[in-house]
Length: 105
Image (cartoon, rainbow, N blue to C red; front, top):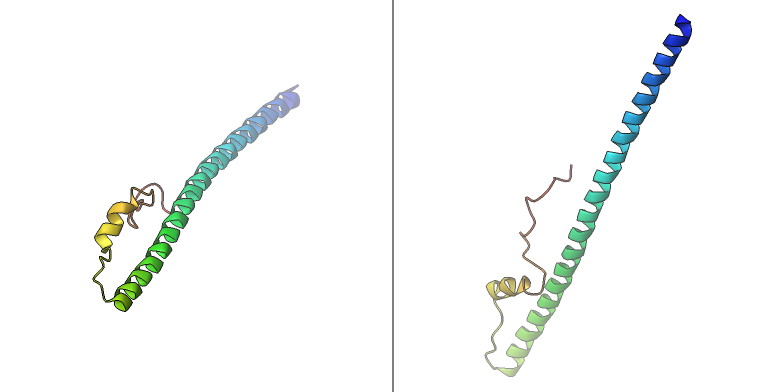
């Protein structure tokens, strides 16, 4: 009878421990899935910004070349002009988003 009681107690402890471990792992999965979604959004925004910056470099190069060839003074947008318009296009600034959320450790 004593052996059965100890066995039942050990089984109950084992089930409880297993359940706690399962819950811990489920929380970890949930946290990592959330972090994954955050990183996906950040990567998408950075791709957009990168494409926008590539276009900007191409346009500036084209604008400078045309200005040099035609002899006309054309307005070449300054960096301040470009960064001010970045948020309107949804690109944000390069510094945007830094310091938010968890680190990448």
